[in-house]
Length: 178
Image (tube, rainbow, N blue to C red; front, side, top):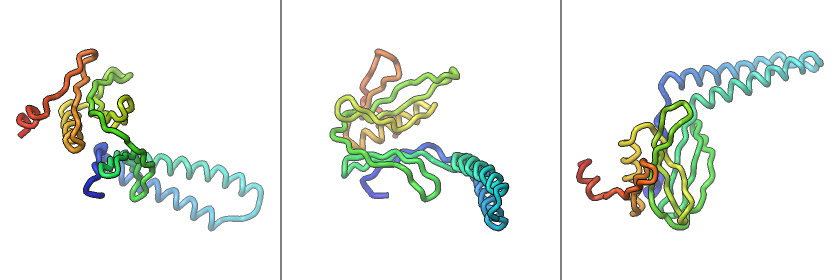
């Protein structure tokens, strides 16, 4: 990763999910290998093969979900950002340009199951935003928002209380955390 590129990531997957994903990928490879070994040109085999392909696709999708990570990259030097879905060395995502960084905000978001999360957004071009981070810990959200606002030299807004937004004094926050 470049020196002027920030990385904001979800937490790593629980340990048990990686071996399970590896097992599922192994099963998919085994099914494909078995089907290639037993291949013949009969119509019954093609019906059987279509069912096997559906199974392999489902297994691969579940395994991919178990071992994937969502990450956000911000390239300060080139003024752009990218959301990625990463599975091993494969990174899916596209760079988008940012014209003018405006501020970083943290807000409270209720979820449908009655719980809540705190979301960190990077606002740019006056009214556009990019969701960077979502977690149930206010202190983690503030720390990520603070670090990002310091790197980009922009303000930090606490919007966790509806209709009572407050700019966070970054000097005071820095003194409290050290």
